[in-house]
Length: 562
Image (tube, rainbow, N blue to C red; front, side, top):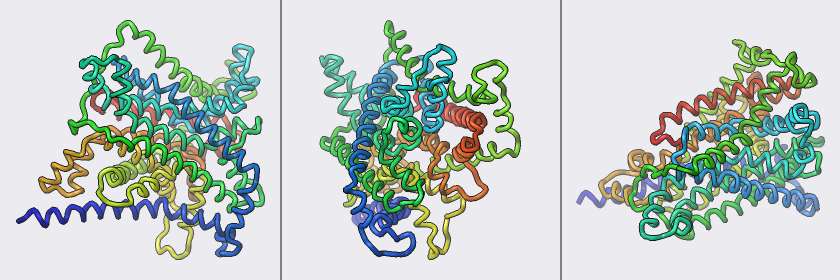
């Protein structure tokens, strides 16, 4: 007699979680996007006018430049997606299959590119490869022609984003593909057949989710194309949006129209990924994760370590070297001479009470808060999308992934339009909390995508058993779902932390007066010509975040960061 009311309450609990997730996403993502759309439809919306609807669309859509911007954006995104698969996919597979010496250290090393702001990495490559750069000073040759081209932009962005592919491949193959592939081989399948028919289908959700993020991060990245491709005339949607914000007169409606095109591209990418991972249902039947079964590399050990070493050298050592050398030089014009190398910039950045040290502490605090908030919210949203028996899950998932498709500058303007309204009784605008809101809005796709991929790779049977035993949705989330998706959530938190410490564009617009983050402080130093001090603070920030991530990695079971 007691079961009937319990079963009636369970769907209500699921609906409460879905409703709470929907309300949170509407406030965090929906309202800024709505206000941006209103701005695109009504050119005078920011001034309270609803006159001349769709005038900006009529002026922008027929422009031949829009087709060029859109084509260049697609070309850049697809090239970076394929490039990261080629560069990092095999290394991630080796990480999952073989017992790599110092594997956790390699994982932390491959997270370093995410902790280097893209515009800093682009500038480090420029200081190294441009005519008169460090490479020419050492060898007499330079690679400026390649660097300042479409190929150079793709090259630098691949080396910035390859960690997403590396961790997705290594995590998913180790978690769900290794054991089943081994069983297939015992049953007589060749290694190639076991990989194609068993391992790859099981790993496809996690890999596809990561490549979706690579695509959307590529099409919304501003710093690298603006820094390296402007000389070759290669312009993308994001640089077009920035021109409409930076050039006078400011064209906010035009920028909103271009942002709408970016949203359409992101929705198309999301739809393709969603179709790819849901057209067939493949899950493990044990309901719990297993320890990866890794083999010794044996005679292939030198080749395996060489692959790791080459990727680390190109993606981590070279840009870091350019950054550190610039930080050590007293003046850029002095070149690589012993008398021009000193620690002056580091001393100035670490001086107690200095603006650089304050900015570093601000960024670390905001990044930690963002990682915690998005991890909890992302796990709940992912469970609602994958498991909750209600309608509207696809719309909820699409709303959660949209922020990665919109440039940070546009998200920031949307937040300003929303939270700078006089009718709010309490507003976060012009306070440090607006940065936390902005970071959560921009980075919520990471935990949602990773947690959803983890849930799709585990059976629902344990949750069903807990429901039959009388557990409610919250208890199931904490006691059943969280242990299953914890590895995915942890890696998402690490990525969120790394990206939040280096976020630039939204911070430039939303940071309250008198406050600085690492990115805004460095940007101001570059504007003032203090490249060395900016690079010094970048080096310190990367060292601090790497040390924190290394401590976290050592506490994870199994020795794998993911």
